[in-house]
Every structure is written in C-alpha cells, then in structure tokens.
Image (cartoon, rainbow, N blue to C red):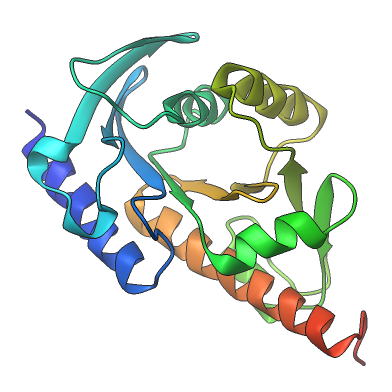
Length: 206
C-alpha cells in the first residue's frame, strides 16, 4: 500500500471540495508511482471525504488497465496523459462551473488566452504577451474513444498542462502534486476572467 501517496490524494480531495470544484462525487485525481502505475481516486466517492482505501493502485499497458477495485471511469484519460508526458507526476480532473460552462460556450476546438499576467502560472509561460492555448474536446461516455481523441490532439500540438472536455470539466497535470495544483488554480483564474468578459459582453478591454 502506497500510504503516503494515498494520504496526499485524500488531502487533495479535501482541498478541491473546499473550492467546490468536485461536487456530487464528481472529479478524479491521481499520482504517478512509476512509468506505468499510479494511485487514483475510486469511482463514486465523495472526493472531500476520501479514505486511504478509496485510493486505488492501478497498472496499465496501453489501454489495458489492471486494478483490484473500481477506479474512476476516466482512468484511461489519466494514463493517456502519463503516457504522453513522461514528466507528469500528478493529474487533477475537476467539474468547476467555469470549466464546464466555458467548454460549452467556446466555439471551435480551443480557447486562446492572451494578455493575462496569470498565464505565467502555467509552466513554460514567461510573459502575458504570448498566446496560451487550452484545447477543447467533445465529451463522450466512451472513455477509450475520448482517450484516443486526446492522443490525436496531442500529436497535432503539445498541450500546455491542461485541456477542457466540453460540458464536462478540465484536466490538468504537472511534474508533481504541487505543480498540478498551481496549474489548476491558474487555469481556473483565467477561465473565470474569460467568463466574466462574456458576461459583460466585451471580447477585448484595453
């Protein structure tokens, strides 16, 4: 049992629940253990009250998942991220209002952000002047199909530690839990700003 990682996952769950980003047992998160194994939150659990037993050890090879319990239905998206980014050490998936609504309101397959100082919360971003792209994928109940869609998008353009699933929520990751949390807070702030812009009906403010 990887007790330290399980304790960390339960702490993440309480942190996310306090922000109301994982309502109604929604969301899932994981910590990589090695190249093809991780600890992930169990399906159907209150993420603000996870026990050590609710954090499941999984191993994978391609799309084949091995686990003694019932992990999140979206485990394949976590393993897809780990396979594409060998530096990823943690993945967080949440269902905030901002990410859910903007995923539906944004036309096209990406949200392009520019001019925000908070862009620098995302690793690799050094200025507010550049463009930060958040890919958007259509939702599906077929996780194999959705994970393959993520892989195809990744081949087209390397992702900046996050993507939206339309009408569903956001996935973020980082080299460790602390970095993944920073990315999530950064993305959530940026999404909140974009949603506020839509509310007041202005696409650009000088």
